[in-house]
Length: 250
Image (cartoon, rainbow, N blue to C red; front, top):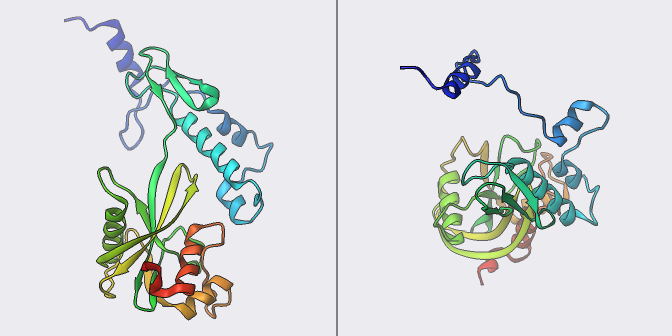
């Protein structure tokens, strides 16, 4: 039976394969504007996280983060998730509309919990491999579908460090556009101090006293360890623990 011309053209386009065997198309998609700028070599490209952590935009970090999150969303939602057709920007960039099925798409925000587990006069800090050398911070993870914030805090603490948690106390929240999240800060009451680290998620984890936390916050730790800068909500979780200890649950 003769194959339709469209199917034949698709087969020809997909005949080229990468060395690993993945199918690729000969029709190259145009580079997004941001990637064109990077390839041009006319500018020094620095990511917003690095700029913010260096304190180069202290007066407008929220606005800069807002723009970054929106641009990231636009770049990755050029096609409709309902029918696959192109979408166009609408409502001054706060919506994308499908030209085919009429579906409306809105910017998304991914909720994350960041929690400081407390056991007596100690708190739990961890390190990920992507952290700068010497930095220790609170544990964090994404909220899963159908999960409350308290459940997410307990699950992440148990999964990453093997620590079961009881009471959870909300602290504060912070937009974190890396790329498009909101961090929900909390304290978790640890029921045990016996660590079982998930080495995929964490490079290391350890219990830290209030006195050592003070050294981390002020940059005076003898081992040159340090806490995240004041820009990050983790800094304020640790600082509040130093000031109030287990009183954060009162």
